[in-house]
Length: 507
Image (cartoon, one colour):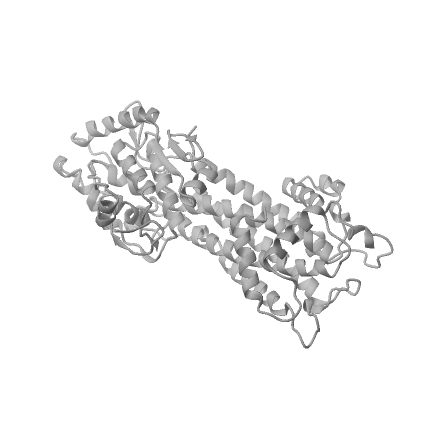
């Protein structure tokens, strides 16, 4: 396995983990190439060099690319075509990708090439690692990939910097320089590409996989916060603990549902609010938004676990084409196709809709004043009419949910052929990635709104207290946001809580 320490990650060809990607992309962990990876890298490279000058056409080595694969390239031009490939394929548009996504792309690309099936020289891999360690972040336009044949346009912009072209920033500054200037400032030399190396650099799923890995890391934080906010809602709304009974969930036998019910029971353990209305309560059943939380969030949890499995496998993949094998075979296939990632990310967008959607219903329920048994004032207003309280926070949650519903239309179900029809079934996984990132931000805001409102709801249940875990989360909320004593803009409070969720402060 990759040798990870507190300060560095050594690439040896083994699968990365989502935590590895997060540590390098978000937090700047240094990366090195392990010595033991050199043998397989050098072996595959020697196979490429033997073929490059030969008479037989081999795709990507001495031929054109895509629909131009029937065009044979002269032996003297097999290196030049690699640089031309980066230049011609750097056709992206739109705002630049976030720096952490770009750093994740560099790491995933380096790790894939290290597995010894791509036929590149070690100098190419070390060049990518040097960019990471110098914190040179290529400027990569966000649109241009159709999620098949690799993330061609984004990876071309990424790798132009490796050869001293394109544009980049260095460190966390926003000043954009040319790729050549960025390399020079860091004391690095441009890499001169040899046969197949340009194709190996751009013919992979590394933008999609970077998005997916980083999103899953953030998804876990949002889902954790959603479970705490749901538990807090049960007590803030004077909900029943009966729907959390373990026997109910064993009877359904859904893994995620059982997991969520257990988490909610644990969060509410020690509550004095629950027994306060356990008897003689005229309400026979709670609304679905409280009663069906384990079923809904459990289904989302199961979807996350499916997606996590897909991404973990991709973090150990080689998505280049053609691939080089020890026997000397060079095989053309389609490992660059992004459909596994596209379907997984589309599924996560659907799951997020339900995480946010049921939270918005709980927000609506407690603010509406419909529950006569609960003494929480309508809209949490200190003086209804004079003060509107948190009325409009529910509007914001509803707006976020509506936008998430549009983002949940699967990108992967659409297809537009490219490359004169030879690339006739594309995954559109890059669009799935963008939709997922946007949906996650919106979901985080909805859960922040629920935490804001349910924390206020708990204030109206005093002197009774919720479970120990819920009270700990309530304390974290109150460390940043005071109780509502009169109307004030909720926006800044929501932003503070969303930032706490993103950092994992509530985990």
